[in-house]
Length: 284
Image 1 (cartoon, rainbow, N blue to C red):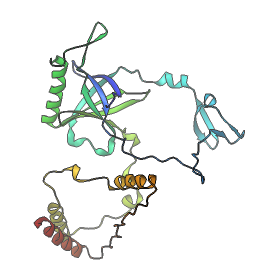
Image 2 (image 1 turned 120 degrees about the vertical axis):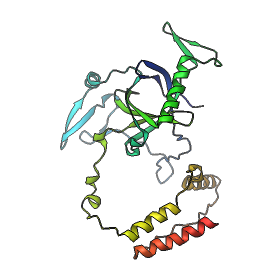
Image 3 (image 1 turned 135 degrees about the horizontal axis):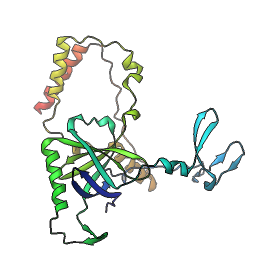
Image 4 (image 1 turned 180 degrees about the vertical axis):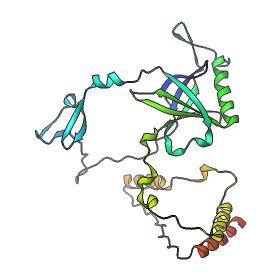
């Protein structure tokens, strides 16, 4: 059962839609390892003061920002409370944009947005109602899904989810419902010019034949409908098999199939060979 991570509402114009957020990413299948010593004993970490050579209890630990070598500004909880943005539990929509303008580079985390349709708020109390009935809030939620889907638009807004930080968010239609993405601010995105192999390399001239062959190869390898279920996490599957085998005291053999790619010496020849290979695979 997926638990709610946040509840509030979406507000745009005079429309207010009660909602709940659920994490969209399932991390239950991921593996995490503990660090052990040579005898198999788990290693635990201590908060250690190098200057006083002692373990520091949690109650003594403060937040500090380094402004120079070994010089810190201490930030107290009271300082953070003064600048904390007021949490209104409302996602305030600022504008709508074309969905294609939402660059995936800005996306940080994703959440499913569900209508908070199991309850009504009357006189400050939450009252469970008949799930078979349709409320104005349910209809408003469905209307937003349909409008965003039909117009291929995304909503941009701001909200304080958990903690004191205000998040920039995008809301878009996804299948039958809505999905919310927390976004990085522009100041958090490293400029492409910081990568010297890109910024300092002269752009080579692509002739018409290379361009045509490249486009033809991409067209040959283009799927009509993208089905992500065709791709599996083979590493995680093999890791699970390895752990299960070792837990039973068995040896688990993994076939190494990775081959080092050959360096391209002739671009035109490589493109033509790739086209021939892709043509054969589509005929099967």
